[in-house]
Image (cartoon, rainbow, N blue to C red; front, side, top):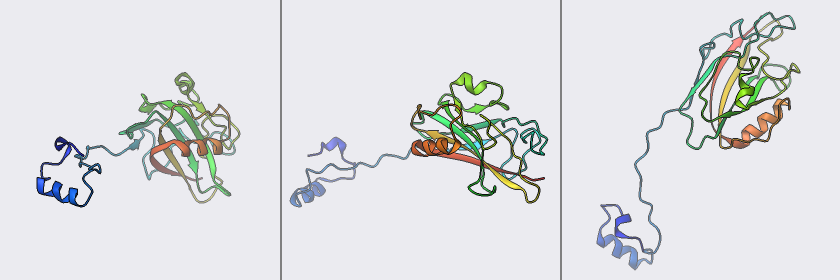
Length: 198
């Protein structure tokens, strides 16, 4: 039987008697708790604006593209409770076939809430203990937008809050493997999308 202190104030002795007659008094009673105010998990960038165009600083520097090929600055807020690490991906869903992976990184510690510009090539991620996939250009780390001439492509930048600090991924593994493992541990995701064409 529930202790009176566990019952809502509006729960009367008459209600308890009714439950006892129905044989339900021994069942646990769920006492509603006030909802905790929580912010929405969001992603922002000093280099990219959601719905905007990728800048030359983020564009690839081979294959007819001429950019600085620097991974973008990213910041995130209000990750879900229980977050133990973060992962980031950049994916082009408009590329032929199954799309094109430009970046996949996992193992970003839960204490981190931002990545500086060029975190991939500068060694910053390695110093954090994070690992990066081999992108679809065949390079470990970030490879910026470089679509074929024609209609601009979309580039979806996503930060994932994960329930584990160890996805058992290694540097240079395929991005599809990163994507699968990230998917098994995701508590929440925040994203922004930019376009680029030439």
